[in-house]
Image 1 (cartoon, rainbow, N blue to C red):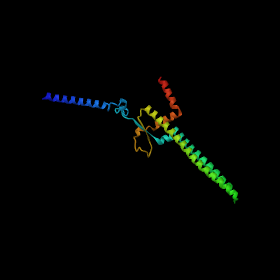
Image 2: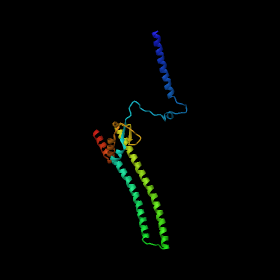
Image 3: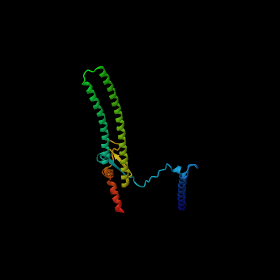
Image 4: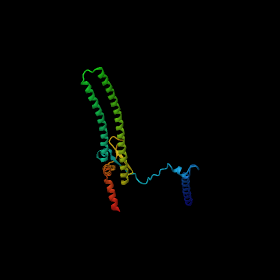
Length: 215
């Protein structure tokens, strides 16, 4: 009786192995004769689940304040805004001076009134066109600066993560999408230091020096 039980278990084990083998063959088998191996695997993702994912975050408000690169970008954006405001203010001063000139004449003759109206219409058109052009220029320059900022910070983040074996670097900001994240994952200080080193060029010199010492 005991031998029969052993044979039954052995037979069951063999059947399970055969079933797994059939499933593997079925999964690996192309869905159709016309599909190539490249087509079958073109959307397949291989993820190593054996190693834990390393996650860290930095405080975006601190980065804006203490990153030299971010501070300079913000200053550039402020300069663009000030330049636009100065252009508008200059035109408004011109219009004010023009108004004062005609007001100082007192009662105008018909010919003077006609001249003033023509000049006023021209100034009004110039002012409207200037406002539109200034707004367009300001928007374009600001967009270019923001794109430069995003591109540079993304590059710094990628290099920083590669250096420290970080799989995911998140940006935390009060009132943002993240409600809570452990302080143990906070790398704000290190990331800001890295950004400042790279921006000043010290990071490249340090890397070269390290490579020289290793060699």
